[in-house]
Amino acid sequence: MMDAGRIAGSVAWGGVVVALALGGCGGESLEDAVYVIRPEVAQLEPEYRKPILEALRRHFGTPSRPRYHVPRVEEEVEEGESYPLVEWISAAQLEYGRAVYQRRCAGCHGLSGDGNGPAADYLFPRPRDYRRGLFKFTSTPYGRKPRRVDLIRTIRFGAKGTSMPAFRWLADDDLQAVVDYVMMLAARGEVEYRLGVEAADLEPDELPEVIPEVVAEVAASWKEAEAQAVIPLTPEPPMTAESVAKGRQIFQNKACKGCHKVDAAGGLLAYEQLLAEASPDVLPAELRPRWEELARELMAPALMKRIAKQVGEDVLPETVLDAWGGFSYAANLTSGMLHGGRRPIDIYRRLYTGVTGTPMPSFAQHELFAENPENFWHVVHFVIATTKGQPVPLPQEESAAAGASEAKEDNG
Image 1 (cartoon, rainbow, N blue to C red):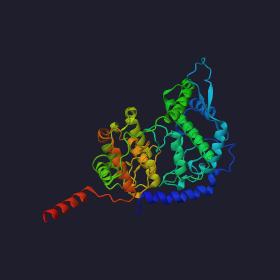
Image 2: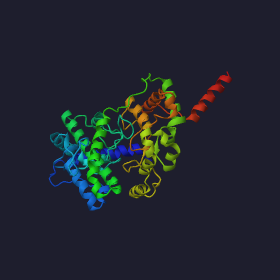
Image 3: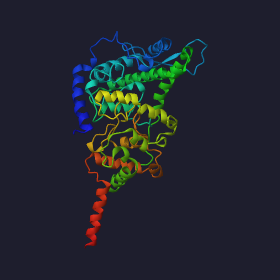
Image 4: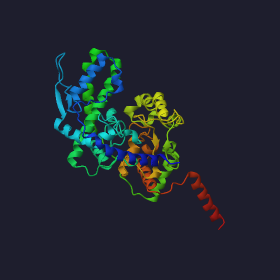
């Protein structure tokens, strides 16, 4: 049976070929194009839906004429008047970025950034949907926006083992412009999502007051992320056999085996397993009050059943999904593929912050790491050694080997 990593690689490569053949939809006219409306907004009554769509157009433009204008909510305005707007990203830069995006990205990620481009059905995992403002592999804490350098790195180097290829040859001006455009799409989608959800608790005449606040909050979250990079608590010690062994012991006996298994081969996560291994304590303090909300979001039964029907009834409905509706696989470290980067600092940040939108939690508050922060580096070294092909002895094998050695010594 082929493992998930190999399937992903095979399907991803085939999908990339399809995407390149489709040419990113770059030759189509955008004059009549419209962004896909999120279901949270589409299902609203007209008195809610219309002002939200008008606000999205006012702040973010259209596919043919993108913009990103943010209200100055700190300024006082007369009742009934609109807040003054500031151009967050220039229209010229967004038009440049849109051209790059249409040529290089839309074939997979779609016109709206919803991950439903023409090639998406051929790819596993599916392309990322930017519209929740959630990004998995960042240098910032769980749930926070990525820094600009995070997006640049993902585009430059891709995500190994997924359908996201590397664009090492992309000109720097093209790269900077497409990053700006992706940030706009993500901000637009998050604003749309939040307004669609919050509308349920609002009267129609309250929307004009809420809309600028949401737009400003989303913009601020991206700006604040630039100063939120996770810095290691201790310097990295030398990667020695002793450090790797310490990391393996922590991995197998304490912190990681529940999801990644003692052999580091990972696999599909299940509902009961997640509840047994996780708790609010592993989340950053500011997210703990949202534990139940996050759990419901990740484990929505209706969504699981719908996905299960698409891939076959043999898939258990209690399978844990990520925030984008995809199956959550604990990484197979023995495959040598680390989607979020292979540098020691990348692995450290995955451990310290978790992986946003997935069941992978932050271990910043875990007692084992809180008592000795250098343990983060020991686990990092174990992960590096494992991805490079170093065998992972199971605890029982290690005990048997130790027993045989002791018996040999006793027998002289």
